[in-house]
Length: 350
Image 1 (cartoon, one colour):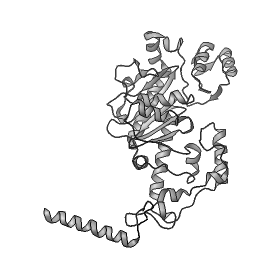
Image 2: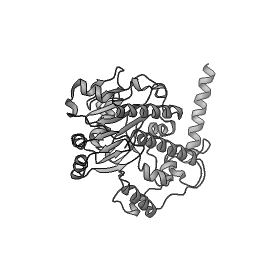
Image 3: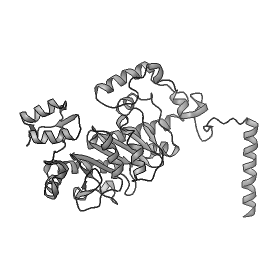
Image 4: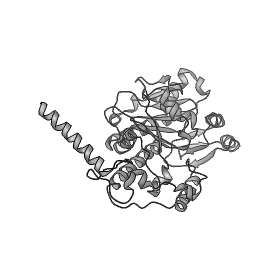
């Protein structure tokens, strides 16, 4: 059992987090409880939680304190969690090759991060690295992921973020390469646990430019599409960050399949408001708080998904989305004929 004392509580408060999760293996001293109370940090007992470990002296603890933290039982348990989530990502095909990365805040200015060049399905605890907020590696022998600066943008802008999970899931990726945000008001669970999936345009992975795009978006969005790249999710734990990815991918998969069917029901604005009320009580962020029911349903989600088709007919390869073209049927027929003639000419040349 670990005794969490006043000094450790003070170090934890400095991280800016507003919630401390602990389990039966962590006992808080009266002094620690007083520190949390004064700082308005919410104490949450969660049997499956591993609370962030505070480091005496913060980021200036030196190599010996970094080594002690990196090899501590609590941090070793988080390493196991990261490896487990990596395997889940790989099994669910949320990553390809050595793609994707996972990080977790373990102390003030200290973060575990997966290494570069390793499949998430075959991670081992000894492969993980520990870095500071600037990406400087302070522990671990494997080279850290090049995309930590993107994770750091979340940690810098969103104090409640404990972990970040990035991958390349297929159905979510389809939205990312089309530059389309998945519509809301379709599935209640997605409304509560995900909400609006944010979208940021393409920038080179791992650069300051992409971090600058993520920074202002993360505080109100736990799930973020990165244009022509992938999906970034954050959570209150490693598993929570992974869950956000799993929920987002399942939602996008359902949407893509559903658009090929006729019709299209959606959740009414007043019912969305009820879901947002539930979400707010859970302490989850959402960019729609404060909107009126009428504002929540200004755009029909199926028009958003299916263009001019709306809910009138399914979108299929034989009945494609037109994206609002102003061409008449005769003009479209002429264009098809012209393209056909060009293809035939090119075939004759061969």
